[in-house]
Amino acid sequence: MTHNHISVQDALPEQTDKKERKLIGDRGDYFLNRIVGETEENISACYQCERCTNACPVCHYMDIKPHQVIRYIQMGWREELMHSSTIWVCLSCEMCTTYCPNEVGVAETINHLRNMAVHSSITPKERHLAVFHQTFMEELMRYGRVNELWLMNAFNLKPKILKEKIQMGTLKEEILLGLTLLKKGRLNLLPRKSKAIKEIKKIYRMRRGDII
Ligand code: SF4
Ligand code: SF4
Image 1 (tube, rainbow, N blue to C red):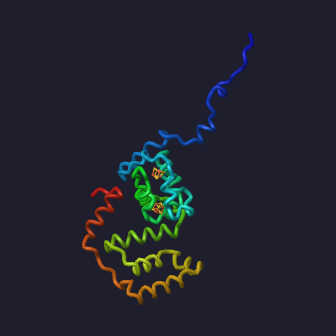
Image 2: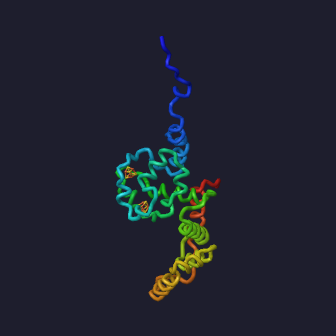
Image 3: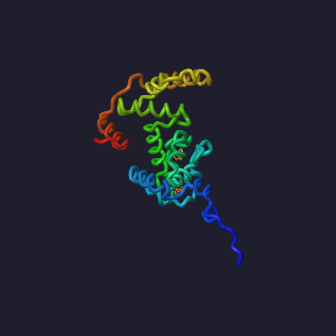
């Protein structure tokens, strides 16, 4: 009787495959449950019909498309999402949410991911957009609403922004647009504080996970 020699290594499933694959339950459950808990969105209801992506006006500029964002959450691929351009490119126009047959709040979920990224130590893939988002939130926290003129001023004062705009040649264009809006009375020179400033701050802190 002959014995073919089978080593222990041969008997095991392919280790390299196992390492590279990202499985639900591997790092999926925790992240999925966290997002569902924080957003109250029914992420598991998504069946990847792609209607959200087809409705998105800027999906061509995204590295992870809206339907894939939902899939990545189901799979627990947090790092990939935090490092994506998608969370910064999204315009929050909510077309994706409107077209979803399962009422998954895709736009709200992406917005939540963006806020998570802001409060993480991850270097944003789209630095310019990330700084703009941060400035927008700072202005909102200060006044409870956003004055476009003050927002752009605050944004321009952030490190490297003005220099980058000069290099890209967009500063002149922006100034001309600002002057046109000013002439038409579409820009307020001074910011006005919202009466609901306290509530706005509270909602923001709650969404961020602060203990109120
Ligand atoms: S439209 Fe809704 S169900 Fe379809 S892929 Fe997008 S999130 Fe999923
Ligand atoms: S909210 Fe964002 S992801 Fe959704 S359609 Fe608009 S730009 Fe696209």
